[in-house]
Length: 124
Image (cartoon, rainbow, N blue to C red; front, side):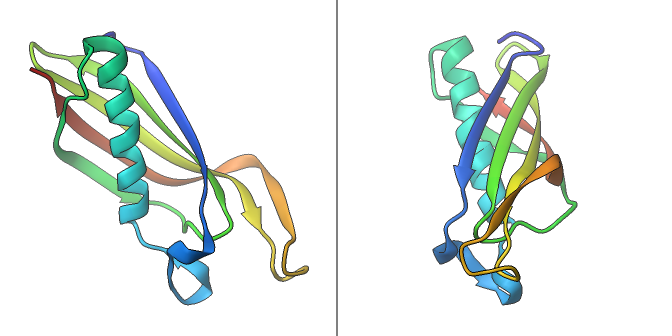
């Protein structure tokens, strides 16, 4: 696996994923996306899906809401014999604006950083 290799996934957050008042989505949603990104990183570099060993740090910086469009990005920062350390960031690139009208939304420029994490994956 190459240090610096980056993978990004973009996804719309459906309203069915809202669990809390204000349309908030739980933090596990971001961690699931990070797992998908880590899987692609392992496939691209090691030809194997790998296994997620754990997180050494997770920071929830801003809320993720139903109606958002998010980008989950992972970047390899360290390569060991079987382990790879990956830094993740989840940004909100578009946000629903139901205060304007039910289907209103806007592009966020700059995007809003919502979650930052560092994790380790292992490959056979």
